[in-house]
Length: 96
Image 1 (cartoon, rainbow, N blue to C red):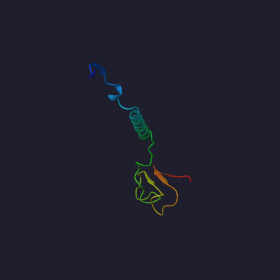
Image 2: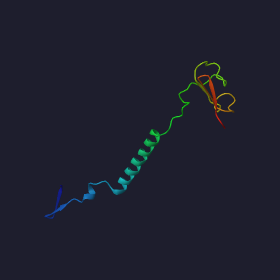
Image 3: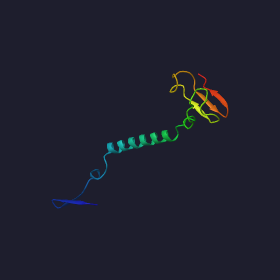
Image 4: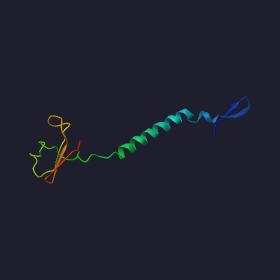
């Protein structure tokens, strides 16, 4: 512990000179909490099952015979209609 000598009297440095201010600790706590919340949100966000399927060339699944594919109606064709999943010869249509 460091000591200061002033006019023959020994004084100790105040602890507040060495410590982080309380408001700065609160800022650190808020930032750390935010980082934890974002990390947990990223870890536990469910992945969409169609993200890994290749896109169908046509809405009816032709062009990718005997291979699973996904037709995203919002981004393909005329951008209207329902999403379609072709898998093992079966067609699954999104209910809207």
